Length: 490
Image (cartoon, rainbow, N blue to C red; front, top):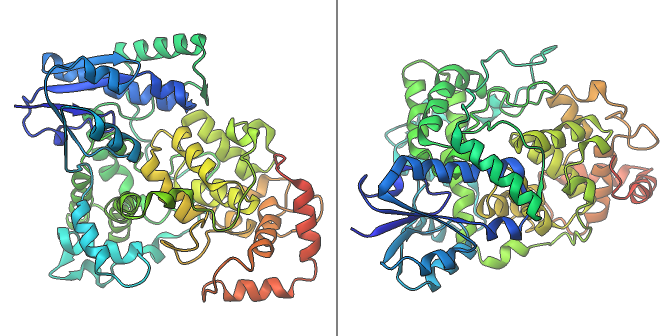
């Protein structure tokens, strides 16, 4: 039986053909020298890798080396590895002698099935169409060929603002993992690496995310029982005192390979069918996992490598140091300060703060999309190149002019005001676009549209907004105000 090389994002039992199969695990220090990672992400990855080695015992050979290539030179037997999750890693394993590359795992729909589906499409690829295909292909929440409940997406039911006057949702928090001796060893090693000159961003803290399959499955069971029913209605809502809301907190577990995504999809489906969760909540979670997660994975491989370098809106400004270094204390705008602090303190915020606060602000300011891909990749515990390429290039920064979305995800302060409790305690007024009290998001929204009115393709969803832009008498003053504001922390 061949030795199976498991990367640090391929750690679940579903990456082995036989539970007795010999395993190779490699901890490469060069990965952390080359890039500035969030301290808690580095801890989680190393903890998960070392916990897997401890679980496997003598079945695994665990190597700590400077590079992957150095490790493979010491292995005097053929190894096989599942298709890695980045182009750089795939190129590496293909040029190493004695390494066989197996099909990808860790996703519900195969690369071949996606390629067949995409090849038969005409025009742009859209997640909603892929999601329908995947539901039918895998028989999820369907009766025959039709969706349970009569609609493929219940997204319109899942866009509620937070409950009025609430500071937290009425759900129990996700279970917190108990750190052990492996975590203590990881923390000591990271402290030593920092003394040696390896740099991290963000604050250290207790490990909040699963590092083992057992922990990930426990969190999934807790979510399905206690949090899924509330997840749907408020999946897009934000509360300053409730960073987790009712989200599953499982994205890092999927992306480390600790949890099979199909198991989570089937679990949510069963919760609905047993009457334990309403259909909009179950469907909303399934859409995130089977729909969006699979979709962005496949686009990373289906589109050409140059897609990652897309910059069709000519965004040339460097990501400023205060943002790059997670300096939330430098920010006055309450929503941006709180979300950036969440990244600093946890290495995680949910998808709406990522898209409509962090990504929205960067889009308005014209920051370089490629730098943002790297920032999201390294600053989030669930960040990987395949995840962030689509989510940043294609979605939040609209850098490809709509190859995967129909319009830019850009908005003024009104959206944040409607979907959160941030604006009530902020010095800026979401209704103002000019003056000292002008909301940076509201002013930035109109400045962005003015700057890009000739670049954004004609679009029915944008027609009313662009017509409104043409009627604004103060747009030039707004543009000048935002130019003078520059990249200072708002």
